[in-house]
Length: 112
Length: 112
Image (cartoon, rainbow over all chains, first blue to last red; front, side, top):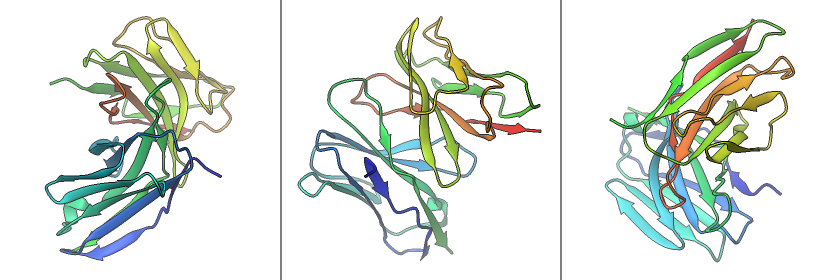
């Protein structure tokens, strides 16, 4: 079983729709959870960062962490064509070498 | 502005050649990382360094070498022992586990 599972998609939605992305993980020691956005031929950029369980909102983006289910989600409201990118989840433990465990990424296409 | 600079953006390697990818950061981050990204494979860790003059192998270190003589610099050499080097290479750095990674814009290496 891989440490982090993420359905690679691709996911196509019409402009204005809600995009829902998720990852599951197996390591219960993970406490820091991140979502990165990667445009084609560019490096990933940090989009959302959450510690432990709960929700975090930033503009049109909401990140949720459910540690009991080992499940994290990213929601994008009022999606725009500029949101078309690959979204990667990542997570790490609160101790040790701070290596991030990444999902494989989920390609999202927002159709105008 | 602070950030990570990777160079060159595109690199072509002939069979049997060693090539070196540059990664420089002016963020004063202690830890630096090299990843390889292939379609459908996600990010795979090659090497990482948590402090100057020290580095550790990641999951796919065979055929690669690194050095960390300065805090700002973490060059990656792709040796002739790496049989399938064509990929997108990403360098990252972090200040601490509470801050996530900052990525460079990547180097696309192609074997010709």
